[in-house]
Length: 442
Ligand code: SF4
Ligand code: SF4
Image (tube, rainbow, N blue to C red; front, side):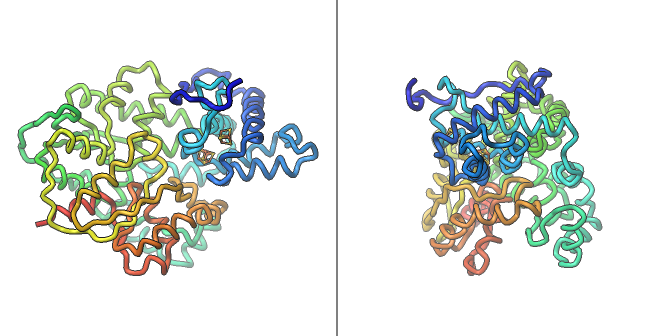
């Protein structure tokens, strides 16, 4: 048997509609098989808390092997995994096509799906992952103001921790009084200029986060497109991309959301639009996770092919000779964090590449997991772990004495800003799209 694989990793589709996918005995057997390989390897020990939890269980067992760990304790490992995919994409030499066929995140996902199917998921977790429903309710203007005020009130936050298990110290994103999709400026009638690498017109999938929490990011992206004379449309109808439900193991809800999102997106893809989503987890959902859940669906394939991260699109636009570089504002020192869900898209560091084109701008790139994930770092029981995982990121971001703290993932950026505390000094938090718009300002 060869040690490690030299071939490019491939990923097997998930057979999640087959009853055997939920066979608890089979899942435990597969967990034990993969845990045993990981025990012999231990390369991922510092990636997250799932691996240290596993290795501590093995090291405390009577046999010092996986067979000494109680099956009931496997869940302790599963609960620590927030499906960032970093172990699979950046560390593991035993991923397919290696015959050991180690896909740690996917066996975690399968175990989460079993747990969900057995009804062993807390009300809190179902609520936090209902981003679209929560956003619709909380973004009603007067409700938004009340929710935002309560989120800043320590007594209300203590009550929320007791009742819901949302850690009282976690800084939560505010809800915007005006939703992005309702306020988005229509595109000017620019002529469509296709490039060799990029379609010359864009459809924007806004995402729940931009729509309800940080509409400014979406407006900044539209301003950047307008500056580059790229015509755009806002996707007519959208629901949550499904990533929060995927992370919960609620695959039926992922399928329900896919049924809402895919028909209009596939139509746009077939009509020659580049589809952009400004949140990396949502982009990854359409590029990778939905295709692995629905490998034979032609709509899914069409959307996968048309989907771009915004900076991936803009850098390719530059390669096509169609990006304006008439920057007028220097940005100074930017501490930029590349989130896991951008890294695992295998597209390179496109945001860094573009920000470095701006004169008078020094970009310090931090390429480590910040430890928040969508909802994981919000939960009372994982808040401390999420701050601990993020500590090296907070330090590296502060070491560059930044003017700006930035990450493609707005949730990670908020978490990093919180973790940096006084170390952030006078640095401001801004999304890379906001920085790019600023650099173009007249
Ligand atoms: S997917 Fe991410 S959180 Fe899960 S085990 Fe791998 S590195 Fe850890
Ligand atoms: S996931 Fe792969 S690299 Fe990581 S500990 Fe397991 S076998 Fe080793």
